[in-house]
Image (cartoon, rainbow, N blue to C red; front, side, top):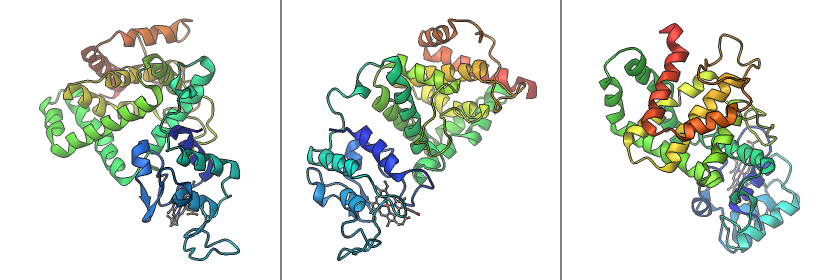
Length: 335
Ligand code: HEM
C-alpha cells in the first residue's frame, strides 16, 4: 500500500513536465486531511474508502464527468481525461491509487522507508523529494496565490528593511516597526507553520538528516531530479536567495516560542550557506561572486562534520548573530 507522500510523487509523475495546469498541483502543499477534503472545479477529489466515487479516479480513467476527449465519449462527460493533453496515467498507478483510497487514504504506512532512520543511499532520495515539495509549495511559479503573497512580503523587500537596520546603521525600529504590522505577522506565522510542516513530514525530528540535506542542497551535491518542474537539480539558485531568507528567520526568532523545527531551520540555513560558499565553484558561482566563508576550510577532510557539529551546538541568539555576520561579510564591500 502506498502512503500519502508516494501518492503525491505518483501524481507528479503522471502530470509529467511542462507548465502546471491552472488548477495547480492541488495534491502538493497540503496535509493528507486537507487533500481528502479538497474539491477541484466543484468535484470532490477523494471519497475515502470509495475509489469509484472519487473524482481523482474518474479524472485519470476518463469516466464521466471526465472523458470528453475520448472515443466513445462517456455520457455526461464535460471535461477531458486528466492529465489533459498529456499521456494517460499508467494502469498500475491508477490501481495503486484505488487501493490507497479503498484502504482509507493512509498518511503513513507502517514500515515505509521515509519514516525509518536514513541510510546513506536512501537519504539523497528523501532530500530530493523534500526540495521538490519545497519548490511546489513556495516557488513563485507553482505556489498558490496566498502562499505567493506571504513569500513576497517576507522576501527581497523585507530584506532591504532588515539590512538597513542591521548593516547600514539605521534605527533598529525600522525593522521592528515593519515586523509589528499585522499583515507581516500573519505572513511570518504562515511561512513558519508551512516550513515546519514540510520539515516535519519529511524529517520528523531527525536534525542530522535535515542538516545533511541542507549541506547537499547548499553545495549542489544532490542527484538530478527527473520530476523537478524547475531546474534539473535542487540547489540554491543565486547567492542572494540565501540572504532573502533572513527576514523570515530573524522574525521567527523574535517571535519567541521557538520549536525544535524552527531551530533545525536556523541551523540548516548556516549549514547550507557555508556549503554554498565553500563548495560551489561552478559557472553560477564565478570567482568574486561566491559567499566568503572565513570560519571553515573547503579542503579540510572533516569540514562537513565540523560545520554540522558547530551549528548543532549553537543557540538561537548566537545563530542570529552569526546570520548577521554572514550578511555583513557578504555585503561589506558594497556597504
Ligand atoms: C478532480 C480532479 C481534477 C479536476 C476536476 C480537473 C479539472 C481540470 C480542468 C477543468 C482543466 C482545464 C482548465 C485548466 O487548465 O485548469 C484541467 C486541466 C489540466 N489538468 Fe486537471 N483536473 C483534475 C485532476 C488532474 C490531475 C490528477 C492531473 C495530473 C496528474 C491533472 C492535469 C491537468 C493538466 C496537465 C491540465 C492542463 C493541460 C493544459 O493546459 O494543456 N488534472 N483539469
